[in-house]
Image (cartoon, rainbow, N blue to C red; front, side, top):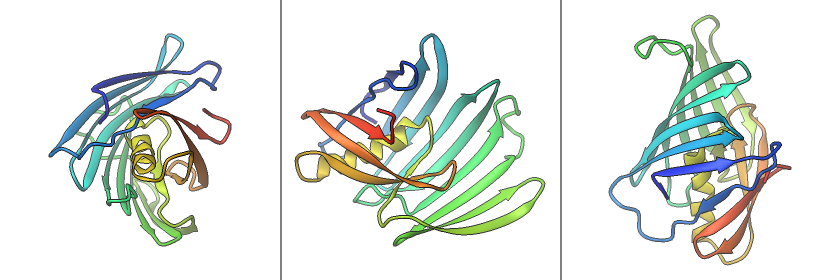
Length: 194
């Protein structure tokens, strides 16, 4: 991860997000802790670690009065795509040892995404959705997953880069536009959010 602690600030939902570009060789294992705030409110806290082929972490985020804890594990390829993502979801107040309320496996292949969704009440459902080749998984509040975008931009040609993102929350593919500000920083625009 770029920095052990990164604090992002948003103003009325449209604050600038600066992410560091990593251009050096990947170490054996990297760890990071990220805090996302809006004003005095903490929206999300993420602890993540990455090695050569895997990114895993826990994202705790507030959504209105409720909140959730999401554990994820993603297999990461050289182009920063993640063809396999596993997610487990609990309510924020569920005990650590309780079974997940929802478990999801997402498989990216070519321009399609297969999603197996298992929950405590409804069994398993499988959906296959269209996306774009080499789309990067995106989970609202996860800075570690957003860093896959900046790493891809760093390894590409100079200038602005458009990256397809598959939103793990709603199954939509959107585009992220990466603007290089300097050799070590970028802004990322996803839809109307910068």
